[in-house]
Amino acid sequence: MTANSFPDEAHPIAWPEGFKAAASFTFDVDAESCTIAHDSSSTRRMSLMSHQSYGPRIAVPRLLKILERQEIQGTFFIPGFTAESYPDVVRRIVDGGHEVAHHGYLHEPMQGIDSATEASYLDRGLEALAKVAGVRPVGYRAPWWELNWNSPALLADRGFLYDSSLLDGDAPYRMAVAQDDARDIVEIPVDWALDDWEQYAFYPGVTGSGVIESPAKVLEMWTLEAEAHHAQGSCFVLTNHPFISGRPSKAVALEQLIERVKAMDGMWVTTMERIAEHTKATVNEIHSHARIEVPSFPGAGASFKPARVRETALN
Image (cartoon, rainbow, N blue to C red; front, side, top):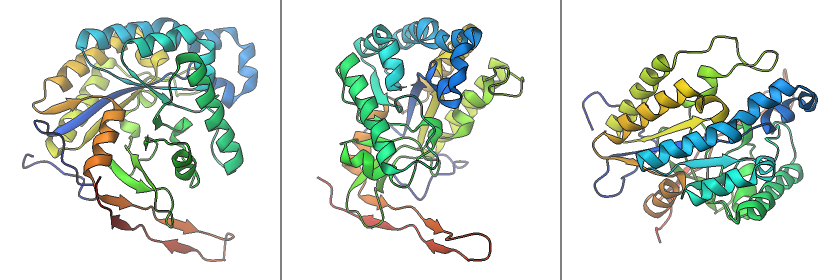
């Protein structure tokens, strides 16, 4: 720790011996799925589909070479539809020793869906990853980072170790799957400032303002974030989309960032799975999340169930 650090006091964690902070480079291999889920008619747009297919076809091989050169493993969150569409690419990720995690089936919109529908998305995604790559993922990231209140229990039912969709911390923690459920999974928080979508993403009529940031500016911003996480002993999680950060100048900046993060004294650069395993084994506080219930609006008032922290014995 340094004098100018600002640790996440709500989620204290001690890293493995020899490490003072952690970092993970993650990749959401959405390919065509995210645009199809947003608007199924996008399949009629040949140029748009080519923009998305750049991810698995061109960018993923490039990114895998970068990770190999830097001698680190990444975590790849892969929708089931992407796995079925590009099986050789997914198998190449696995063969490279990287973690494959769950990211929905067709990057489905998550807001307002019921538990049965969400369960079907989870199960179909699991089936696709098992069939294509022979893997049973332990990690999950909700499409658009949009977790529902029923999601943690659905993940626990299927044996998931961790989720990475919430934005309420700088360090991983154990979260109760529901306020009255004894089970827990690990949460590894994310941050929109550490998502390449907000910096680079643009396609006419689909997303973005048309302002595509300079990779030099993004490298500076992400370096500052990594330095702050390192100073306070927390967990730097970068989210990349191959069709964005796998393009030439952005890939160069990403490799420069990896080199900088690796050079930080005591920084544990690893997969999300290993971070989650360490959290589960060493943290005994289990956090629930505050719930706000508004029966009808306006005029009916609201109820608030505060977050709680309980302790459990470590194995």
